[in-house]
Length: 144
Image (cartoon, rainbow, N blue to C red; front, top):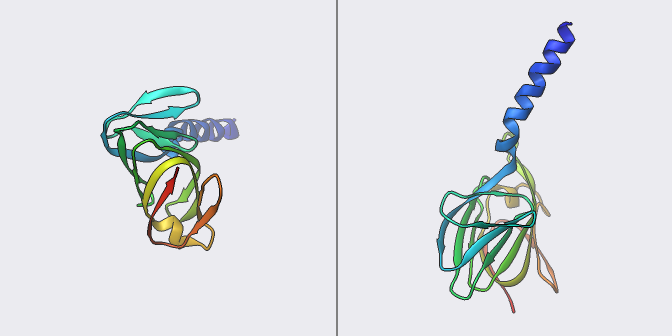
């Protein structure tokens, strides 16, 4: 009986914690046409919108988006861009993780956070023609 109570308490704790684990960052600013595609749904973008791993950031001809992630990484997504947040894992206690982003088109300005500093290949950015390993720096990627 006691084991059932402990199991039930653990299940409730995990269920209530799941939404916090899902959030990897937030939209901080947006201008023009911009959206987040999540699992086939298109979400309107506004400051404060929570992001999850697997989300696709899309901007139109006049669109821009600023994003801050829980590890301190910052993105500036330029016009006509499509950026996929492929993988994001961050252990706040150890300050380590893994972050993989794919830039299909457009431009992406990055100021890396704690994940990039935690390991040699902890943060990577893919483009249609290359893979960039991030070592804790600032950079801009442009994909035609």
